[in-house]
Length: 205
Image (cartoon, rainbow, N blue to C red; front, side):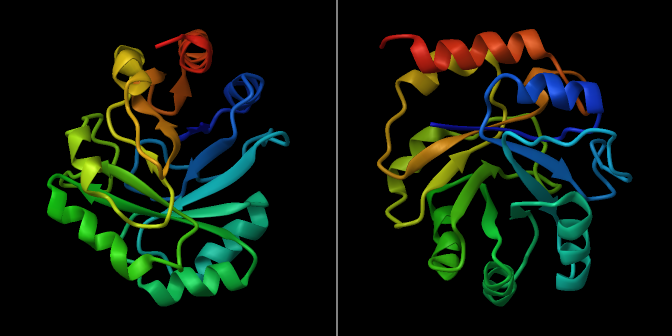
């Protein structure tokens, strides 16, 4: 079970969250987001993978952020084409393609990206590009038959623990945590995260 914490900005908060032993940390480069990272924090994680989150950004601009932040992976939340995903993979980057989900039919949007994304991120469909803080019906995931693993996102909070413990899918690789664990946009409640991660990994069914 991979644990990704997204929407990080503050150096001290980054260091504290990294110490929880997470696998991935996300930095949002979408200016309309309240968690937008405009400058390099004074500290960046060294013990987990750095993921840059983009929305319909050009390849040169993505690669510029990759270099500045020493990113390991790129998460795409817009209408990016398969060709962009392949170009990023050719640069040695892992690609996470985010897809908004509201119905079983929405899962079909993953098909064109098979082989061009290392992982999907299934997020709640909303008017923006994720970050709604709402959860979609996880029963929809039963309809996913692709061969690419996925991260689950959208409205996950401490109250989601029991449902996550009972969720099963052969391609489910991990979870993406963000607003459900914040004290303010971009600042995570480290104590809440620590308790949740411990319980998720150690609580028996």
